[in-house]
Amino acid sequence: MKDKISMVIQLFWLFMKIGPVTFGGGYAMMALVEREVVTKRSWLNEREISDLFSVAGSAPGGVAVNVAAFIGYRLAGALGATAAVIGIALPTFAIVLALSLSYSAIEGHPLVESALKGIHAAIIGLIAVAAHRMMKSALFDKTTVAVSLAALVLLIIFHLNPIYIILCGLVIGIIIVNVKKKLGIPVQTEKPSGAAKKEKAASLNTKTDEQSKAKIQV
Image 1 (cartoon, rainbow, N blue to C red):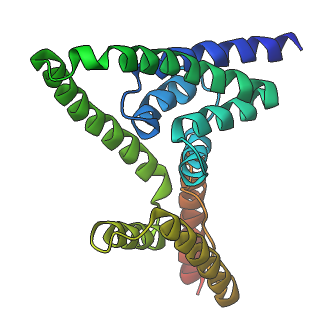
Image 2 (tube, helix red, strand yellow):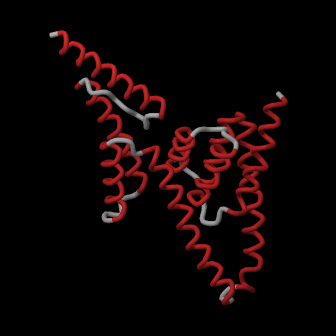
Image 3 (cartoon, rainbow, N blue to C red):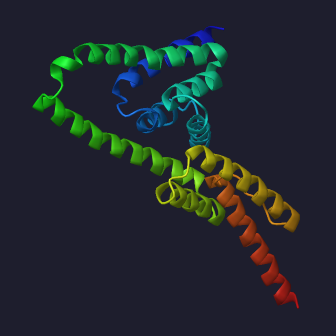
């Protein structure tokens, strides 16, 4: 019980710290969340955080709140989700309220305009980093690369609604997995870990050695 309460408190303070610096919304905060949750604290691994980001991005509502809720629930149940959501929403609400009250006084000010341009440029960098890290774990074979490129084309050229893109990806994934199973093709649903790669390489080496011995005996 004490461990759970401690985790709830940590979740609240972590997301309260992340909230005020995530200008640009949920996608801009992903790199920071991954660094805090995966790299520094080892609460989740890269595959788990990538899955949570994918679900948070496709679920209704704000991405930032969804990410906080999913991570909080994964680590400390409903109480953890509540603490994480309050933590990320409270400082953001206070900042937005303050900006709303003072916006008329600072609107059009050269320093404010310059600061906003700098923030916009930084946000692009944060989103690019988050996309790159997700890509490393999500794109692991020709099928996932093809689906990703097709989604990119549909979004940029045809301006298709993202909801339809997500639904199409869901249907395509189910169809591909079922077809591969019927054809007897090994189904891979995640990027192989380092241990899995070593095990596969060792298996191939063993098979090669056995074939070489068999040829020598013949």
